[in-house]
Each structure stands twice: as C-alpha cells, then as structure tokens.
Image (tube, rainbow, N blue to C red; front, side):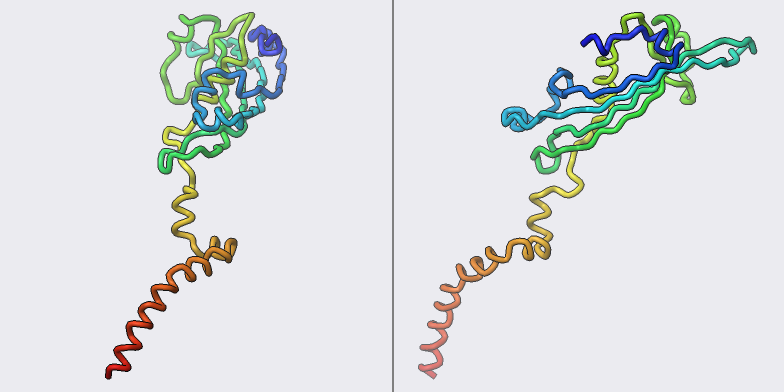
Length: 197
C-alpha cells in the first residue's frame, strides 16, 4: 500500500513519474461492479496498469501576475468484467482513462476555482496522498453508463447463421435429420392418395 502514498506537492514539483499494476481485488468499489456469476467463478482476476506523472508550470493569474501551478496526469487501463444490459450475460470491457488534474492546496481553493469547461479538474493535494483511491475513482468514471456487448452472443448465434454454420457443420445435418420422419410421413400420406387416383 505504501507505494501508492505520495507527497503530491513534491511529486509535482520534481516532475516525478510512477507506474505499476493494481489488482482488481485491491479496489473494493470496482469489485462490486463485477457480475456475481463471474466473481463466484473466480474469473474476476483483473489487473489495471496505471501511470502517474507530476508537473509544475509557471502561468499567469487572472490579474496578470505570474504564479506556479502543479499538475498530475493519471492514465489507467485494463480489462473489466461487466454485465451486458441487453442480454444480461457477463463480458469484458477494456477501460482506458487519461486525466490531467490541477493540484490545489485545499478544498477552499478547489471551490474557489471557476467552473469553466476549459478548466482542469481540481485535485486537492496532500503530503500523504493515496494514488490508489484516485486510480479507483478514475476507473469508476470510465465505466460505461450502459454496459453492453457490441454484438450479443445470443443475438449473434441466432442471426449470423453463415459463420456459425461453417464453424459447426455437424449440428445442421442433425437438425435436418430430426424433421425427416415428418417428411417421410408426408410422403406416406401422398403415396396412398396417388394410388387411389
């Protein structure tokens, strides 16, 4: 856990870069997003790669006076198990997030910033800042609002008979063999009619 605790102000001032991998199991809020059947089967062993880069840049304030601002860019990516809202089956979605924050000293400074779309999101810094909490927050924000397959497997199987038929040639003849007794019965019914004529 200590590898995630940093002095964020010093991290930015020195332009530090840190990266690593975090297990899904270490992110309790993300774990709750995993479909129950996947977590029960033990397949939810996801790993997310993260990279944090600090920076400090001179900028001009609104009154024209120079000042120095600190920034943190966080990139997180990795596969996540979700439940498709269309077919209700689990699937893996690749999450990818990159956000640059402006580091501010306290909540008051964060609230005092203008709410412009052009402004970077404020991040309240700390000498004992937990990067893992921020990583989890960004992953939660990267989750799709409505998780779903691009093409649901159940829909795909019923509609795309061409590729499935080629992949599974055996079942098709079996399905044709099953109705053949009915075809034979129909043939038997026709035969007497013809004989009768």
